[in-house]
Image 1 (cartoon, rainbow, N blue to C red):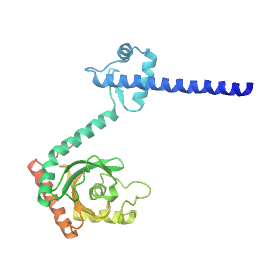
Image 2: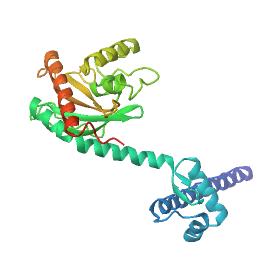
Image 3: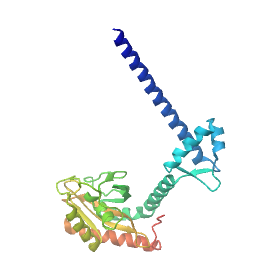
Image 4: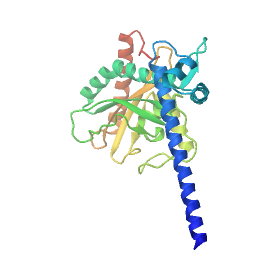
Length: 271
């Protein structure tokens, strides 16, 4: 019995130590977060001593927290040794700004394409291992009107994704290509051949590859130096859009993007 009480006492002490570690870890995260927010919101870059004094944290502890944030790329030091936003946050900010500018510049193209075809028009950019849809204009049909904005879609199963793969904006992910619908391309060899066709035609088509009954066609958006920075698509149900329709719409998308860029001196406002 005495041994059992000893085991229970030891277990309780161990649990208290774990809880203490968790609490201390949470406090450290809270403090580091407060330091980061202060650095980002300061009118002038703060130095170590100022941050230590403002947050009432010992200078040695403040230094360790700042070093951790610096290692993760969240902050860095300027030429005077003060702290400013790091490369990770700067890159993220540029990316968000680029998306906003692209949406502002190309939204009128989506509107025109949706009006001409009656189908849904989408705008997408590359985002790590999947593409990201950042703008949409619905057509006038109820069938097929799905909100895609904010969704991340596998490159290999979408017309937009094939454009980004074909022009080197994204790369085919490592590992097995997921089969999403009955006609999703899961063979790398076949996908590479498909991307070659995309480059020759200038547009990409999917039929039942992302979802059974869904078809789409997409074309690239280029910067004035030729770089592809995004893609625009028209999608709808297969009974309404035949392969011949998709090819014709693909050419129309190319023409409308070209006209938009011509009217804007060949620029889409990419950072």
